[in-house]
Image (cartoon, rainbow, N blue to C red; front, side):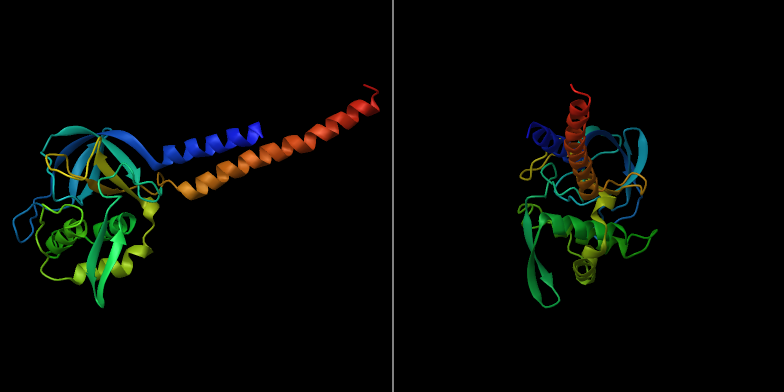
Length: 236
C-alpha cells in the first residue's frame, strides 16, 4: 500500500513538471507589420532563458515594451492544467456559421494556436489573423478591453473548424508570473511553438511513469515468494 501511495505521488510530481515552468523572458521586438487599426502584430521575437524565440500575442488588454525583461510561467497547452495562464478559466460565446457557440479556455487557446500557424511573411491577411486571435478572448475575457474588429469572420470560422486538428502539446503559453484576468498594466501573454524534439507529451509520459511503477511493484511481489521458497529448501 505504501509503495502504491509513493507511486501516486511520483506521478503527480511528474504531471506538475510537465504542465508548467518558470522562465526569464526579454521581449526583443515586433516584425514591423501592422493591422488596419495601426497596431503592431505577430509574430514577435523574445529571448526565453537566453534562446531567441518567435512568439504570438493573444492578449490585447495588456502591453509589453522592447527590451522589457520579466519572469513568466511557460505552460504547455496539452498539459490539461491552464491554472497559470491568463484565460484558462474563461469561456466565450462566439459567432459560428450557423449561430453561436460557447467555448472554454482550452478550446479558445487551441483556436489561437491554430491561428499562429496561418501567419505568412508580410501577407495582408496577417492583420485579420491577429485581430481574430485578440478577439477570441473578448469580451468575456476582458469586458473593458475592445480589440480591433477583423474585417470579416472568415478566420474565426476557420479557427472553429480546424482547432481540433492541432497537436496541443506542440504549443506553450507564456504568461507573466502572478498574472490576473481583471485589470490592465500587466505584461502581454504570448503563444509559441515548441520544437518537436522538446514537445512534452503529458498524457503519454504520465502513463509511462505509472506503468513503470506498477511493474516495479508487481516485480517485487513475484520475487518475494520465490526468495521465501528458496530459503525453505535450504532449511533456513
